[in-house]
Length: 75
Image (tube, rainbow, N blue to C red; front, side, top):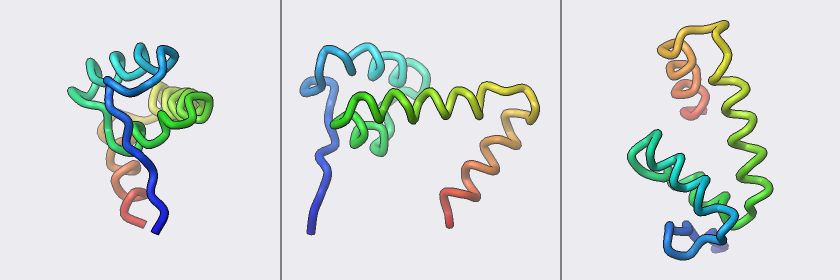
């Protein structure tokens, strides 16, 4: 069964270190899916940019956005 290494702060590239620092500051930890994406820094950056675009909008309340994110993650 193939697996993806969940990178830690100790074994990421210099390019990813500041990203991990921001994530840790924001969430208290680096979520496992983002640790997996760190294997491909460009993809990680694109995903985070997309998340910021969607979650950064004022069109919906934070609670509504989180509820939608939770519901979608359960699919």
